[in-house]
Image (cartoon, rainbow, N blue to C red; front, side, top):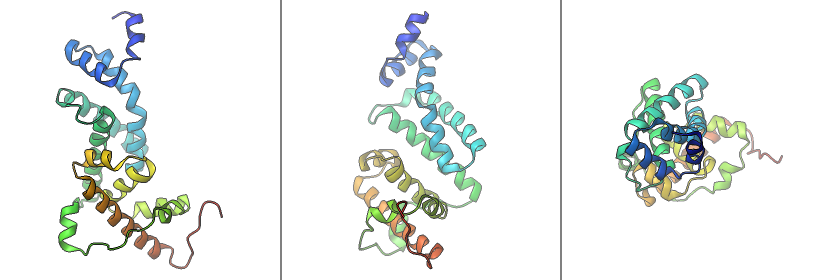
Length: 201
């Protein structure tokens, strides 16, 4: 492949790069996908794993999974959402193995706990000081932490979160509401003697 063709490859869409790689098996096409998304994948890994070394290893493993499963990508969602899904599931699996805890799915929670009747305003989370919010997130179960990060830090739409987790939009909305209730409860336990301090105070 010539240098001029290599430069042109940078302008290809994700779908074009995937099609070219699957057709020609030329790694330069996949390398462009890797360069395009490695930063985002690493940022997601380090935000979930809170360890730079683990995050670097996880990033490499995620892209190995992406490469091995590239032919299975059906474009029902965007490539970025698909990569995010692989990253999310890989990191959750690492967290579960490290802590040796089961991943509790929304369906299971609904069978054993009462549905929250009133949603918590987004401002309750958004107005927490960054260091307090980080402490709250660290004390949340991995699945709840991840879905709140997707919604409020990664700014993903409900539809995209549903694609990543393989759930309906209504199920995602309910899971976010449950996670916010848990976050509020954890905040109350950790900072019961202090009022909510906003970043503007």
